[in-house]
Length: 76
Image (cartoon, rainbow, N blue to C red; front, side, top):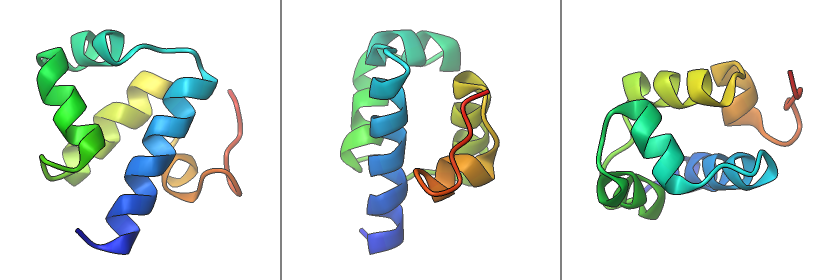
């Protein structure tokens, strides 16, 4: 896995925790199983642009803020 991908996954995990959202809640919002979402966070399943956009929407932030977290993160 590329270091950029690892960083983005780390951002996803950190934002989820800061917002106090459980993996199962994110999975439900995405319409996938909790185990599938867990595999996204572990890097077992590739993170696509579409999935990244869906996650940003669930977190109610822009994709740029998700990618650039914490430097560009603006809690909305």
